[in-house]
Length: 183
Image (tube, rainbow, N blue to C red; front, top):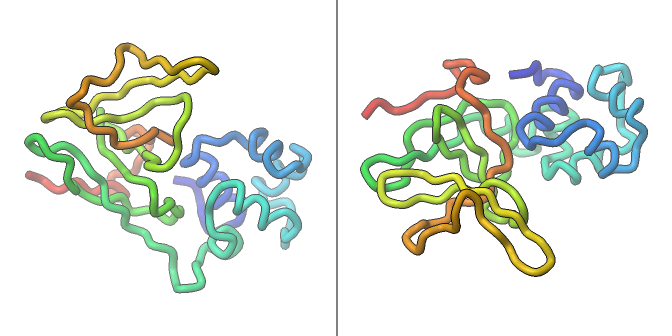
């Protein structure tokens, strides 16, 4: 996890979690890459210009981006992590972090990684499905005429979990940040 005590650190962390490059964020908010680089490396002492647009583009709180604190107090740290136990998708632990995760997103533990899954986004990308005692990951390709699933279409008994926004592999998570309930 990056140092989230600075604006640049918080920005780097949320870019990592959302799977967005600095270049992509620069395009989204119409700023120069050099300006974005200065923000990420804390070269601008008190940035205010474009910070509201950056927070909006990343779907995060402006207050958290600027201060690391929400208006209502310190940003929530513990996010429930879901996983398969038996044949049900239930809470299996929590992820301790300083980064904001949208309320419409789920954290799903699968294949030794935490998947941050959006229940609102659609379109081309990886999707997680739950069926029986397993989680399946399928890739969806949208084009003008139809959509195609790889390696196969979801079966009728597949229950959609959501679109994978990002995947954090276990080796990139400090064990103190991820607590799984022993069952």
